[in-house]
Image 1 (tube, rainbow, N blue to C red):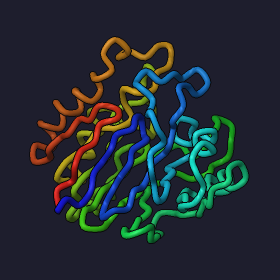
Image 2 (spheres, rainbow, N blue to C red):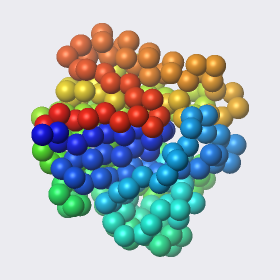
Image 3 (cartoon, helix red, strand yellow):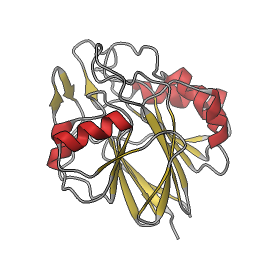
Image 4 (cartoon, rainbow, N blue to C red):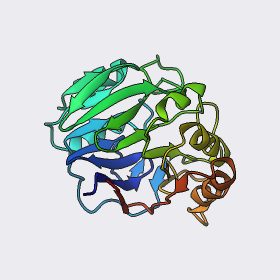
Length: 248
């Protein structure tokens, strides 16, 4: 029987379903965030979920208005400073987690892993934390959130079924702490999952983004480079809103 599924809602928002437990990642559900506009169709209805995973505090990953649109109930896992902000500004049960922590949500275990990324919400703000997550049940799924490549990715590779890897962003370039298609292909080689699914592309765009005429370009470039750098990894490119079944 299938272990579950991955739905690419858009940008870093996904639904990871394993063994009947649905985890929503970095929910951004609105048509715009400041000057950043959604260029892919917004979800027609809010995704169902048993818990929420928030990787860090940047506005394209932590949208407090999107969180307030979602029903409170299941736990929200987030780095300590991010969890405090969510508790203060929404009605959700935000629980502080750090790399090395493990939490049980429904029928799966969620391991919190490191991320190499700017931990501030604003350029002059204080560090609030940044993490990734490994969801483990009958399938194992890594959600990178937003990160650069780091050597300890190798330690996540054992029995990894799927890796959700950021391959670009919303602007004309990506800076330190991010992956472009080439760096994401390097990450795929380190992680060696059965399949890699590019995220963080083709959904949100600022005014000068170079791929606006063809939003699929970053994902296709990752697919091309991964075939060279990580030939044993099957790349699955999902359009925003599409779902992929995870084999059991």
